[in-house]
Image (cartoon, rainbow, N blue to C red):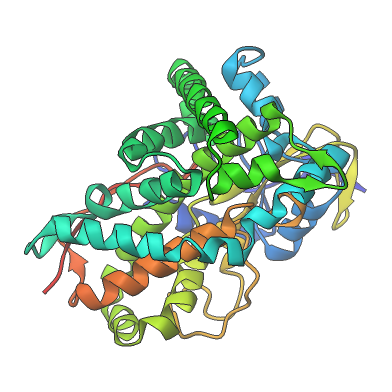
Length: 400
């Protein structure tokens, strides 16, 4: 049996100046042509669907949040405590218990009840544009829309949406290797502020119950078991951190993709109820905003004749796995695709907020497509890095 360290693998260096949003698709495709595995400074990159599914579902692997934090000297303080309690970093019975208690709050039906609120926010943001036929889409819609939605879902004042966006943006940087190298104090400050805010919301709900996600978590019970106060705080913080920046980024990529595929946009605009769900599926497949999902090997594990020793970190590449199908390099909302995607992960740690994110994206595309005929870029997009959440910092658009 060959140990993974003995393999001659293509190198993917995320810190290299020539690795970034403009080039990484091609570099990953070239590496995939050589095999199913590549090497990076921190992890072995898994490039195909079969192997990605294996590592995401294997009981011998776990999310390496604690280990990565320790690599950057994060061993105490609010950020370490948040990482330690994050549901992503829980395994076994602790993880199963939490998922069982809160699963009902994240079903498709639970997400659907917020669709009228989403449409209301989209209408407000559209009205704020006035008669213009061009805008910087991130600032105008992609950023405020999911932050207002999360505010509504949490029962927070909509006026607090800008603060929720800031905290989400900063806390999510715990998954960005580049940010961990330079921004730890800023991330820690955001975690502390967000925890204080969430704690205040929880205290309000215990004395003033409402019909929102926080109330659902407080009331969650199974066979007499309920969430503790700290568990509620951490889960709400996870929803806040994971539910704004990610949806903003995916929506911005959706409009960027459609601006480059006008016939697809016209098709969507002609029949939004029919094409919005497959359009969202295709956007999630083609340009996942989490291109890499990390796992650490807890004990020696073998796959395809290769031994991965305990402590090895692997990064499952959703970007390659999602495109591993017929015409996978083509963006087409009408194509008959394999529905399995790695954009939200897989296995026990499949993203809790996936249904809410899909609902937000479907409502946004269904609302915008008929109102933005002739969608096109009005300038060069300013793309973010791909090491953590792959976002878009600015997206100038115009329409007829």
